[in-house]
Image 1 (cartoon, rainbow, N blue to C red):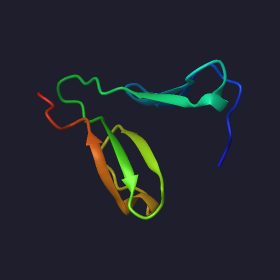
Image 2 (image 1 turned 90 degrees about the vertical axis):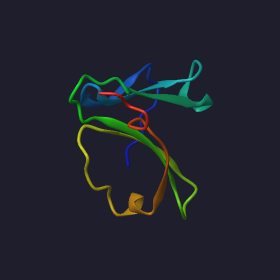
Image 3 (image 1 turned 30 degrees about the horizontal axis):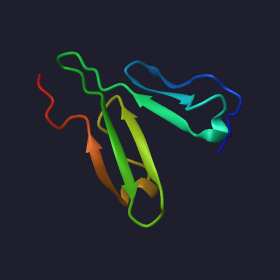
Image 4 (image 1 turned 60 degrees about the vertical axis):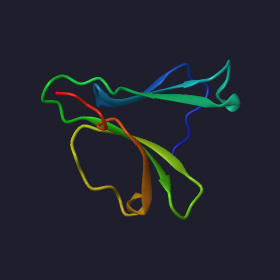
Length: 90
């Protein structure tokens, strides 16, 4: 795992809107960070966002998918807390 520090904004992923923008909450990331995932879609898009809670570990993760795919083994044991596809209109 890598650590990023001393940043204003970092974009994770390169295929908008299947990306996440991370920025410090305040002047420095030691106070916390926020992650923005784009739930915007055009008709026919397959991208979606999920927030998941791991069922055994004390971890919550935000996922931004371009396509439906299988999660890695660790996150298969998790519960979906929110899914951007719920209530989506085509």
